[in-house]
Length: 326
Ligand SMILES: NC(=O)c1ccc[n+]([C@@H]2O[C@H](COP(=O)([O-])OP(=O)(O)OC[C@H]3O[C@@H](n4cnc5c(N)ncnc54)[C@H](OP(=O)(O)O)[C@@H]3O)[C@@H](O)[C@H]2O)c1
Image 1 (tube, helix red, strand yellow):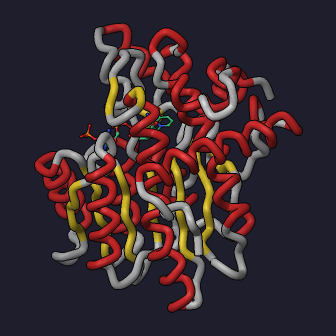
Image 2: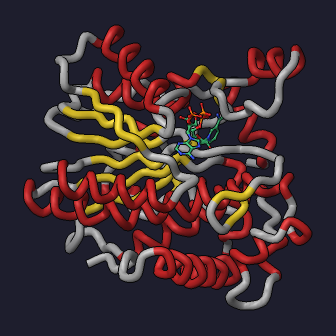
């Protein structure tokens, strides 16, 4: 199916089913849970019996309001929800969050790395353009920091735990012209305004997520580690993501085209409870799908290796030893 026909099917014909998997006794972290898909994924997991859901938010007040809203609609026992500070635009904040997970959580069954931005405006946080810091570098810094807790929980309770990323169908149309950069210069080029294409930037960030899901899964085989690593795509949803764009036309387009965020969030919950067959896979709309675009074939494999090597060097520069998945 072409990208366009798949879009029509997704937005007008197919509705992801309401999740039914049990989260009884489970502890989950959802990043970017103050609004949109992250907040609705938390609500679903609480309804499905989760014991402890941590809303990882950069804005604590907004996170608390989201938690209160979930409490009011689910009547969950007090203490089910917690709001922890996490700002992905700061490596220090990500490291502090990782330390807190290590020190304070007796178990962790699910990490949904959902927080993300989509902007065409150039901005810099840490040493990158901000989409790359938020959607890629900090996301994987967090993933490597939290991975040991997922692995330990799987071993301790003889279960499989989940690391799920909210990717996007748009990874498939990424042009990623910055990949022409000389070896070792991928992230430097993505951080060079004169060499970057901001109209493609969000798509590139989602492509890098898909590559890294495949890579991390290959480094963490099921059986010995038992952390299921996958990524999902929720379809076009009515959330705050397009906050840079406003006006009557945008509102109308949202009404006609978008899924409610509660419906899109079903795909996140599906990924966070999917079976071992989803390890390393792209799971849009609750079904595993082979990846396309720049991930295809030998060239795709080569590009994946390159993305991994250059991201690994970057993460090791931030925190030496962090990418060791032992
Ligand atoms: N909506 C769609 O159509 C769609 C489609 C495909 C994929 N996605 C993906 O879905 C994910 C969730 O987005 P959404 O659509 O639910 O949009 P959203 O309502 O804007 O939610 C994004 C969340 O990420 C948080 N966030 C942004 N920057 C952050 C940072 N530096 N540190 C910590 N948290 C940060 C936001 O926090 P604040 O509340 O403080 O801003 C918010 O909670 C994103 O990864 C997005 O790429 C969305």
